Image (cartoon, rainbow, N blue to C red; front, side):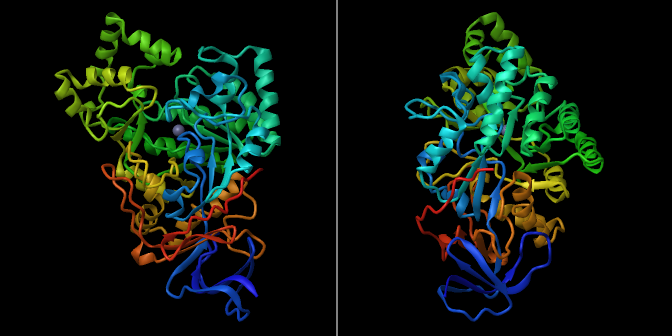
Length: 519
Ligand SMILES: [Zn+2]
């Protein structure tokens, strides 16, 4: 007698091989039988004729830690309802461990206001222990964020590491990887990583490569200098032999879209010359952006405190305004998604706010940075849908949310609809762009599982963990929008994590069967 038997679904195993009508049996947390017709009885039998059965989806670029949802909302409803069963957190340079000092967590304040957070760990190993005491709807693994690691040493100061400091950082990274971290992430465009030199990154990439772990890089530039940023990162991977993933690949700003072929060519050429490189992206044309990142680089160097001091100096402020006036960004259309101080600006465009304040949109932007608290985020529609479609079907792409798991109660801020709708939107788009369903599924199952090093997941086969999704291909639909993001997707009827249903007949079960994953 099995615990679960799913009958007569079209089974897409996750490797890209064509789907076949099969039965899949589960005992406990594992897949124990895959066959044409299984006649052994089971406690739960699901007739899935006419539906698709795939491995659970893996979100290799997830921010549920930076938005604090792993503590506030371990049900991850927005993720499980689109079929995600495992997530990799600690991305873009920010993780919640190791904490070498109380300054280490400053790097995530741009995503979440940390006042009142209860933190009782320091090392990565203590963090994993702490997470293991909690329960989650899906499996959770983490990278080490380089900003977190580095700021534990340099604090809010912006400077290069001394030789002995670099030695210490390498040692702690090594210990963290041994304690179960899946790799290292870097957020090179953020104020505290912008000054990091290639050499420092190369030294760390070597540590990651030695351990066979992942190096996940948020590029230094995603607009006019995208080609140089891709080159820099590929160089590090080539010279260190590290397993590289470029995070949320995109090109911002219409004037820069033409650079896509060159950037993609560099990545493909490197791959064919033996560099283990892939990239992830989300299937949307609008970015979810930290507001201060629109300021010129020189205005953010020195960290938040220095930046705010600069903004209150009239001469400096005018210099910044001049820079903003000369940029090609259309500021009035930016939509305010969140602020950490209550300002009633959420859901308004910068243009509307400027009109109310009777100032220019650029001045309103500075006003918001000054008064909105540490976390001010906006939506900016600045990606090329044609470019996004090319990346979605590219052989080296993986699809990920770059978002977090939210429930329906968090309506004090707008979140990017990708947190709720990435998978259905991707599968529907992929079909339009001529990608087979099997190839599309591979990009959210075995592709990310192999890249991240999630063992025995991402493929339907005997002995693997029973992370499974049943959906109706013809009724799959994302419904979340920028104005109204808190809406679950349609079409996914069952989601199993380690053999237990977290979604059953399209209803959230409330079970929290996820494991904390260690490399
Ligand atoms: Zn990022």
